[in-house]
Length: 156
Image (cartoon, rainbow, N blue to C red; front, top):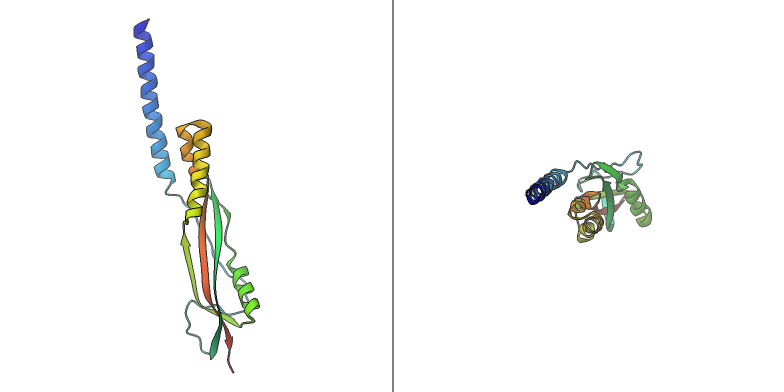
């Protein structure tokens, strides 16, 4: 009887090691993700330029910088929400009573807050189902997109 108990314990111990290897492999592969974000401006009636090289005289009336969040689920395989760049540009031009946007820059980063959100989900998963739940840290992910540029007014 003692021999059977030892064999069962050894088997369970081996299964635990294989499970840990599976979880680690799954976590590493899933952290690569396949998220995609489309920052588009469609049907916009004002010119938008990544450079300041336009063929008209202008004066810069406002510099703007706006942080937007994008949300992803299931190891970044599903995009929940994307930043609405068109709305940001439209609002900035309207608020400055400008004619166009130049020197547009877009930066994507994972901020401290983005990391806290993912970590909180992972910790909650670990508390709920044990160490396997740590892989849930990529169940919900966020990224921060900073959109900045200059609103200009044409000079006659």
